[in-house]
Length: 92
Image (cartoon, rainbow, N blue to C red; front, side, top):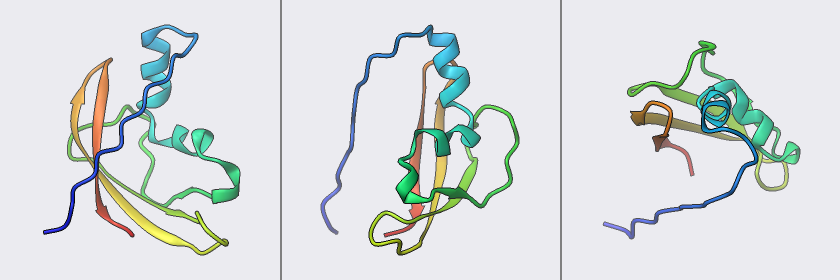
């Protein structure tokens, strides 16, 4: 089995926790926080609702030289108003 990596990042936002949760817990907002050169496109149906455990999110992203990569993640844990965890299910 290969190495397991964990990416963790912290950023301070000038907003309330409720407003931050409302924004970040909506799949359709992921495109807004992804650099435009990556041409991020969500391919799974959008619900307009907050993420939930078991939700599958699929998308296409072009991270290098415009080469498209299909990606799939699953939302595995949600603590409402605080955080959610997504795990890659398919991708590079």
